[in-house]
Image (cartoon, rainbow, N blue to C red; front, side, top):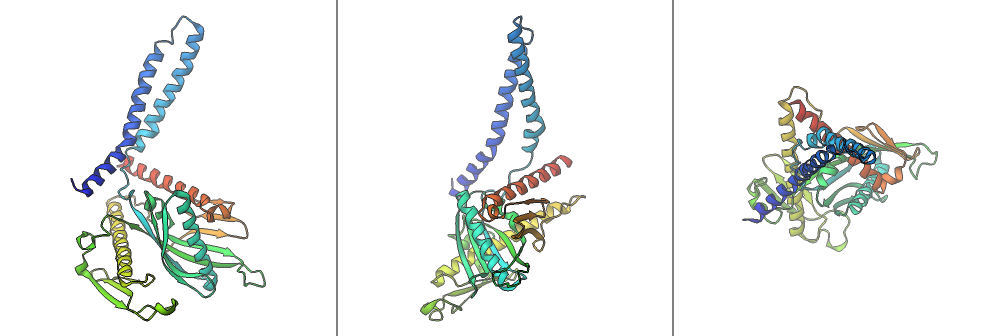
Length: 339
């Protein structure tokens, strides 16, 4: 068997673990219930009382399996559960304050990555003179990264008083985040990738621009890729060599193409249903960070966390993402049951 086939089999086995565990619990509980039922008419009052109590608990367990666990297993396993993620961040309205907040958001993602045991790295960082970040690309690798972080796509709004604001007036700034799926399986051989053919890619090299000391403008290390069928372009100049920048650019291009493919699959699935579930709009404001009131409001969930620091440090963000994941799972279950 090939490595790809082995990986597929391992994933399939892992997907079936929940079903096996639920069935084993169901079988064991049913057997225990049958054994307990025989004791309900025992001559010993103490034994009867214990049997009644145990019978009620076992019946409740079986009901929970029937009403919650088994229906949840009807939801197909996520086809993207194994994917890592690329996060693209760009400042919106707010000027220098938006660039400072962009830096804060990047640190927030690095914090949750550390909290979850993921590997994170900033691949591209367009820094500003005031210490902020105009735009950046962050790579986060690990199991289940994309499925959890995909809910971060959208506009993040911050309301706070900038350090340079003498009158104490609250400013509103925004940062747009796009989360792209990242697969490592074919990074080493992009020419064989069924998602991306290098024959369809125009490769241009140029001298790097911006800060960087003596190395900048000395060699043609910057790379720009243009995917001719889609018109998608990717530029990369943060690495020291042309080879490294080319590899990073291909990685980002693949992620954008995979994101486009997944988005189209979602549209196609929902187009055949009468009741469409509104997909996430990346131009939509998804969350507000109000520093003055120590409040973070997620507008999709409709609730606020009165501890902004916990969100920026990762723990509060994890709680929000898990709530969004449960919401998504419930919606998928409703879709399955309504079909």
